[in-house]
Image 1 (cartoon, rainbow, N blue to C red):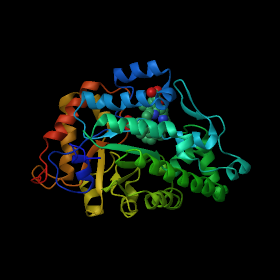
Image 2 (cartoon, rainbow, N blue to C red):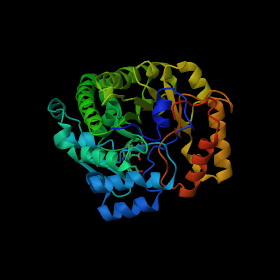
Image 3 (cartoon, rainbow, N blue to C red):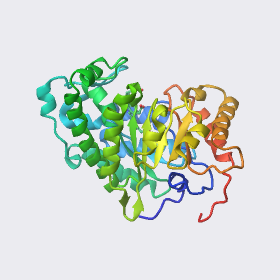
Image 4 (spheres, helix red, strand yellow):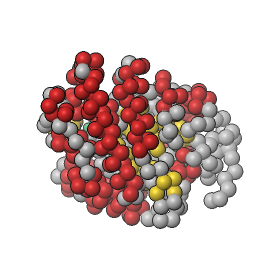
Length: 361
Ligand code: CP3
């Protein structure tokens, strides 16, 4: 497979000079796009959309057709892994994801097993292969998984939660049970991400959406330790090309140095952090991805441009060295975002000077 024609995203991950700053958006294919809603309607529901390689490919490409984005992300969901582990995923209209069989009993936890991704998650691998082919090396394809702790939150709670009462009760009262869930889930995630890499994912990202809800010591023991195991278990090269890994713990800035030491190539940051300060703290050890507040996109375009420039300037003043930055939102794009506002953001990022002459393009 040749390298992508626009490889600024891969170059930024390696902290190499770029021709323009790369930008992609978490949840870039989603309900804020009318064409996404149309395809989802045609699929029947969200899970049917994930399970059709052709329709998942169609929605993956929609934001790239509209905007000049620098990466594609596989269209799927983090909860496909617990579903493959037998928990029975379904979506209640307007209520988000739910599991038919949440993990609360010792017996069910002891019976957990690592699913073969080529069997139980073959539909995700089909979609990965189809998308990679359809991209025709225009931009790189990102594969992803939830972090073990974030997946465990949904598996134990049985869905979303405001206080994480059940999973945190288990963490403090029966840490052995939570460790068992995290251990099996980590092995499942390693097999799953390696299969995505074998089927065309060129970068992989771990979404640790709920790690930031943990106490300091608990984060190290129940979230970061397992993400570190995953980083160590991944294929870091495929077809002669390195496979970079991005770790994103929402609310994880407190632990930035520790995350940067995990062996990953880049750290995703939410909007609570100053990028310049984060850059100094990691000292060039990793690239950084982030971190505009997604709510900025509700404001008029001139405000979006001003806020984006402020985030960019915090990483490096115009004309300074901007290597190692991938622009993104600090969390997923909201379904209430006016689509035209995204265009203003992409232009602002691409117009910001990179500060270094780019060779080899
Ligand atoms: O980034 C992308 O474009 C790729 C697709 C993607 C989705 N979910 C599609 C999706 C990715 C990377 C995810 C990750 C995901 N899923 C996370 C981690 C990132 C984050 O946002 O914190 C989590 C926690 C989930 C679990 C999940 N899936 C929830 C809580 C929901 C409901 C949210 C809502 O807004 O209703 C989903 C459903 C989901 N996953 C949608 C999309 C586009 C909306 C479903 C729909 O079309 O109705």
